[in-house]
Length: 518
Image (cartoon, rainbow, N blue to C red; front, side, top):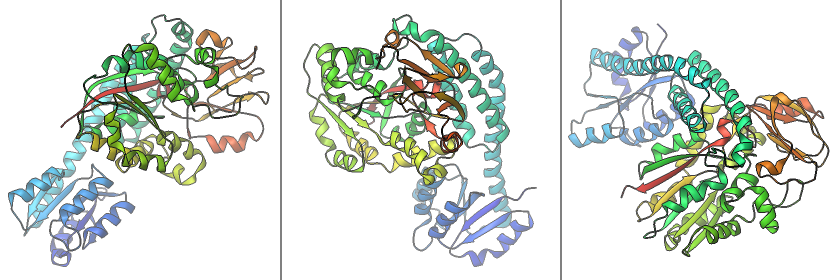
């Protein structure tokens, strides 16, 4: 059989030679360390370790302290605690920290072998059950993809696919992962066809889903609690699968009351979708009613400088009663620290809207920084990086502080992002926008099979920089490249996370109502 690698941490490891020799004869490979610090170093570097034996009493940091830090590195690896202490409270602490089994010293080889088989067989059975369940679900999902779904059914199918994707993250069945990835691509292909057919009608209000410009009107304002502070956090560029990864963390302090889905408008880019959210208007309406707050792609200047002013206009327009509100934008670590230091100030408002830009910066930075390219090399790694960031972020600390107060919390985003892999050539003039997932300009030449084209922008609520301007939106995982330096930019942007176009990942977004558990 293939060798299972064990990490064994015990300050008396020399006294365990008979047990270790027994396991090696049974085909196990053992990495030996004498303290918790070395155990953590091994786990951080060696991804082939499959199970940990952990002595409870070690110098430096205890077994329980080591256990907590191991769970920060890998929440799923099986851990067997070994102790001389049979105290009930100690076992409760260990079990509460998610150990898989424990043994009382002195241990004999057969006890160790039985414990190993129990935790490894359990891990294998969970993985096997996940594989069997997905195989049974595969045919059903395939039938749904091609069954003429409406927008609500597309929401449910997309969530089903990402839930399977997250379940299979912890599986070593690469074949099933590839099958699911192919199924997701097929779903995206059909979703793009569906939206391409319906998008113009949605702009006229014909059986449209809740979209960016409807979001506050439909999901936020009706749920505001007049008796206590309401806090909305908009994480820029937060995909639904990233929300699924953050949800269990947030659930420690908040319970989800309701999870809504909404569709980002096109382009799924901050300039358009987030301005639409805070104004309650489509971009063309913003340009018409508040020209001082709108800049087209070909105009110089910041495109999201006036969200607070647009929010004020929407509040005046839609709320009968005046409320005390505040808009806060977190652009960098200094803003994040300032918010965290003053977080209790938000309890003085009826409504506080916080825009947190980090996830957007992370996805764009991945294009530029080789380090982040390594850290976020695929979807699983991107989710993991989001989770690690959030656990160590000032905003999570702020939310924990607010959980002690009588507030109502809302979490949402403006659009998602997709990992692109298919380049598509576009010919355009110098006035054309530079985004990789959409273009707006006068003289566009492109492969029609790769895009949703909008020849009359005003019909979908978009402004026209020029009389003959048109928009094109990349579908599926396509990204646009100009012929100049094509190979260079193809290499640079392939497998990076981008937004602005048409896909399930970019368009289908969460809006979540939460209550503190306190």
